[in-house]
Image 1 (cartoon, rainbow, N blue to C red):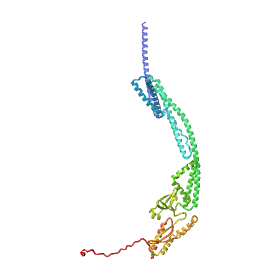
Image 2 (spheres, rainbow, N blue to C red):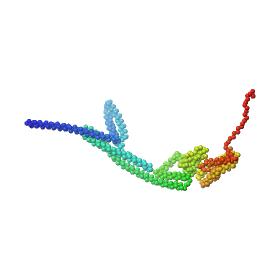
Image 3 (tube, one colour):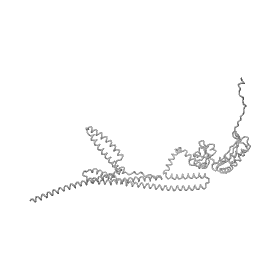
Length: 541
């Protein structure tokens, strides 16, 4: 009996000991699991923090979403305030604190309402500006070569905008991948979180992920449509550019043909026109016609409604003619000069402008003016006292000013004279003979040249007096007899021959015993008077 009792006691003690060991093991296991759970939570939180740092880098999307959430918060706050204001207004009796609260809420409502109005103007729909592609402008009308650059520029601009749009779409795709990782981590956190601390954040991330996915779907569809529209626009622009390039190529061929024709014409003129002045004017006239034809070719190819343009120019011509009267008169004067042939490049002319006389050689005749190089002439010596200037003479001066041509047509000589006065008692006949022989000697070559030139001019002009021999004239002057010797000389070098002949005549007159050159003189006659004796006062006394 005792043995059975002892065995029962032993059995009971063993069972109690075993139970104590199991409880301790369970407690240890529970603590281990708790530590593991906390460790996982910490790891998940760190991972979420890293993901949030990556998300914050996408500032465009995160700022847009934050702005949208702010707008929602403001709207929700406004709804709550409106409900509270309605409650306070409907309350029959309000104490002082409730009345102050009502006034504060009304003021706050106004402020929030104004903020919401500003947000509406900024289009606060989530990602509204980011997911909207760049606007495609209407296809430009490419009707001339300059529009080609505008079309190419538009293509580059639209392509750049499309690439930026695709770049934003790729950024959103990467952002969604990060958000999906965050969503998975939040799911893990909510499964092991016993306090439900991450349920609200998980719900917010779920909504954020849904909105971002919706935006991505919208961008994907929009990108496809935008790309098709862009392709169609590029095809149309390329067609228009191709048409203009072909048209420009045809015009270029026509212009090259025109250049070639006028090049052959220049060679023909150079071969058959030996006179330099006539060749210069013919060359300028050919150039003018060449440029005019090219302008007309371009004008009629790129002006769509020529008749309409001509009508506008017809109405505007009166005002333009008044405003640009001098220009039109100069152009008309250029036509008169070129077609009439009164002045050529290389001619020596004299122009009277504003009381001054300018003598020089024509260097150029442009559409608006003549360019003259002033030379040393008798006018420069006696009047201007300077020379070598470049004188610009408007072409309209041919209608309003005095212009003298010393070398018109083939005539390259002019009459010049030397004036010398001898005394009344000189042998004036001998003086006239000597002067005539001298001028004959030095002007003989010019006399012969002038005779030939005048014979050529008979075909164009009526010439009555064609005497080219030197002429000697005598006139009675107050201080003597004036001998004027006139002769023909080179129009471009009158002073040279004048200087030589003047010295020769003076030498010849001085060598003659019976010829005295007269010049203004004065004679002073001083009469000496006898000196009076000094006055003596003693004689009077």
